[in-house]
Image (cartoon, rainbow, N blue to C red; front, side):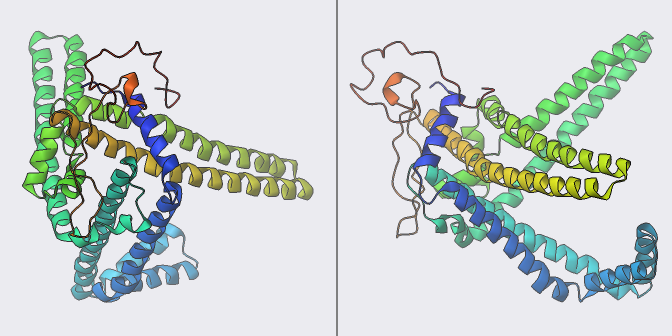
Length: 384
């Protein structure tokens, strides 16, 4: 079953256009909810868990700043004063801060899984409601267990990859020394780096569908990990290239931000050099306009990229299910009244002309007649 990255991404854009409420508004709501929850945890639980130690350190730091200390000196004096208050204060700060970090991580991770569920419903054209982003909260136990095990496996495999990298590097150095040839060092280093990069890609990408498996098939823990590995068998390069294909958008965002900063700073530098107050006022006004335009542009692009990128990975999950299961995806992520995620979705994947977008059910005579020749494949993103 052929994989067509551009058609997959184009079908996600079509799903985004046909979804109501608009995915950009849902992305905005998601970011606001996650940020507000993180702020509440920091504000409400931060003081309780750290016994006020974090706030005490902030007060000490501000105190030394007000006394006229430089930033580095104020930080140094605050640290010394904080440690002088005894081991109990330090213990509260370390343990309480660690617990608070874990709680915040659990909140953000669970909400991210819920958003992936929303994206899966979106690309299946189920018109998911706003509440879909909270769909993983009832599953917080399986989510936490699965993510902990996934992180553990990624760490252990990454450790093995690092050991292999060091061993190859050391072997290359030894061979170069025995052969008394510095020229052997360069290929040895390049081979070791290639193994390291490919190993990291392999380790990280093979578990990328774990969250979708958890939500869509009801598997969690080791079962979800095994299923993700099964679906990714032979598809790691396809998935990584799909992820890499969004690099241009992030590059565009960086160009908007840094280009805007440069455009805002250059007139102000010129105004300072000229020494005129009128020029400084005009340059400041222009800089504010540029910064406002940059903020608006970056926010809009981020809100559009969020459902686009996540939806593309959700669509890849559906494609992987179809490829692994003979053309049939997993159960639809629809959240029925019985608590399940819904009934079956019988995707028959094709890139032929009979499928419209190239990523949906095959229509017509079941594929017994060869499809007509395809026109040149259109691009989705400009660099595809």
